[in-house]
Amino acid sequence: MNKVDFEQFIGSFSFDGRLAQADITGSIAHVQMLVKTRIIKSGEGKKIISGLQSILRDLKKGKNLPKEEDIHYAVEKELIRRIGQLGGKMHTARSRNDQVAMDLRLYLRKETDNCINLIEEFQRILIKKAEENINVIMPGFTHLQPAQPVLVSHHLMAYAWMMQRDKERFYDCRKRMNISPLGSAALAGTSFKIDRHYTARLLGFDGVCENSLDGVSDRDFAVEFTFCVSMLALHLTRFCEEIILWMNPEFAYIKIADKFTSGSSIMPQKRNPDCAEVIRGKSGRIFGDLTALLTIIKALPLTYNRDLQEDKPPVFDACDNIKMCMEVMNEMAAGMKFVKENTLKSMEKGFIAATEIADYLARRGVPFREAHGVVKQIVLYCVKNSKTLNELTLHEYNKFYPKLYPAFKTDIYKYIDLKNIVEMKTSYGATSRRSVEKQINSMKNLLNRKGK
Ligand code: ARG
Image (cartoon, rainbow, N blue to C red):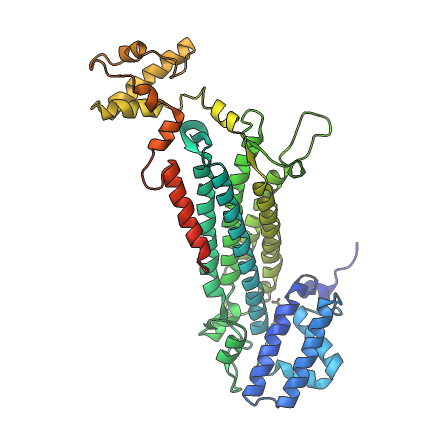
């Protein structure tokens, strides 16, 4: 067995390379501040900054930095190689402790914005699908049993509202993330006359951490971010589960493009919903990332502890996986086609209009509880005689509630017509076409307002 490489074990170079850009951006701002506060000379600042910029350019060209304990050392050593000992002045009035906290905030801020954009894209796709299918009726389910007919659009918009909450959660998390720890130094602050607000402004932070001890030890923003990702992943699994069901030939509600599915190696008839399954599966590792972060930070005494270095693999893993999931989901959803005939057909067997008959009696003054019992008898009768609710004659209906004669009139057939059932659900947020169109409009308005 190979011996453990001790340096590699205590370092983070193998997994923190992606912070390079944030690290250099932060260093440039720090050096600008050192010049402004006359801690270093302006000529020195210029040389350091152009050295940092040349490193950044090379990194963008794909040139990697030589191995060091971590990315912060790697950048500093490279700077010194390029501009000489002067490069060592960059680290005046700073520590890797405030530096890494700042890097991670900058990095995750960008990832937060990426997530927000991907969510918005999904919302727009859902809206488009909702508009395309504004007349398509499907069974709404509770307990996965056919319950009442709803518009496919209404069902899709439910996901769009989940996404709205996810987006708001990311915006909210961003507020606490976008605070600068820079200048907290190792833990106690510094005796140099630095200007923390200046670096914060240069880096687009909304403010500075009020307490240097908190500044270097706080990773709440990383936990919150990973929670936001987890919640989003959770919502995706719910949609994936429905895609998987809807693709099942027993349902056959939707068709999705072949590239999101695969065949079976031995069963030629199968189309497996692999992409939806993989997204559903990836939620597991994302929740694992959240658990890992919580566990790493749990019970750490103030302030910086090296354990915190282990925050990066899970938070990066969550970033990478949620972005892949969202991209796949957006493409898959954009090409999803509903098969109207099948959603309709599936409602023939389910007595999906039963509630309407109970409501009908209730509107005629029968106490709802009693009406519910009557309709239960009607449904049992249908099952026994292999009839649908539409096929019962008025005479048959009226046998079930002789107390009020005739309890049922010809208009009962209108009340159990699927389209009509949906159209009658006009309460706020309900499934009638008008109500759904209203929802769609409110969401479009939200999408047009940035930062919502
Ligand atoms: N590589 C470290 C991390 O990712 C940087 C901070 C190191 N600070 C220290 N005092 N050893 O957390």
